[in-house]
Length: 444
Image (cartoon, rainbow, N blue to C red; front, side, top):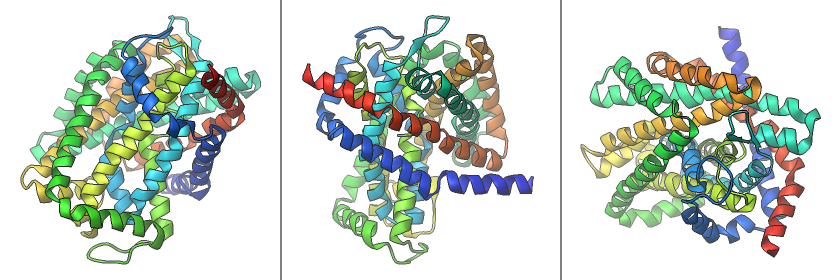
């Protein structure tokens, strides 16, 4: 196993290394320039379309609002708590600034993904609207590119079972056992039962549950975070100063913090930002392809809000709490760092609240990623594979809660990054379509 583990580690270093991060950021910058800043200029319009999107406005399976909630259920997850903390622990407060930059250009990427997903979606044999990178590669670039769509779907299935299922179940089992001494097998079975009750109802039931859970968990987490920041209001100014100066000067060693260069701030800020909001990875457009809409641009403006909410709102809140608390120099990392930052202001409650938030975030991620995995499986094997996939997904939950997943995490994380390659190629080649559709919409 050691040679295989070492080999996957090398691939992972390349998959999440500078070339990939530059490609993801470069694609976002190219799309933002080609769209002439449209995602930033139409942010308010996007929120209006989200509100209007509570009702159907065309063909599809779920409302535009529920499409975004399904997407957010997968993206607002452990990355918003543990991922942000890891970025700051390794890159210093300046990493948060580079997460913001990633999100700003990522809005253009997410917009383009959703536009293409709606433009090139299909109806399957069951009458469901299906789409995403594999479909806009096949239908937009032509049949000779279908192999690239198949590659994306393969990466999506394997990465989904890893990062979207096993790792999420393991995270919940670990945090609930650590904070409430609940046995891992109890957590695993309970999650499997709850997941079965949702997943067997298909995307419509998942979307309905996400439409209730995601706003509740996001607003609750924001409320707690704002209370903590209000309690540390005098530290907020210095924290923001540290974020901006650290982004361009690096951070000297201090306390348990080992120090970080400017490159470390950029590297970990961009990598964790992409991991959190998934802009460029090609997962979110799978959910947006099912939206009840006849206007790709309108759905694109709704989709780009996912990146805004995930990174510029939720991740920012976590980051500010960590930096303002001063705990980032303690030497802790991941969820433990976030928990200690909240615990400092809310003794006896902060760590528990973070544990509960992490559990809920991870569970909704498991639900959201089931949609992505199911659609990728259907693309590869047809509609007959849908029901077996759902049962396999449910069966994997207790396994994830009980297993040691170091290698599974590494492999899934690698394939998660590799999903981006086919998607980014398609986005660049189909960018003229995105620009043309957007210009035509603006002229109406």
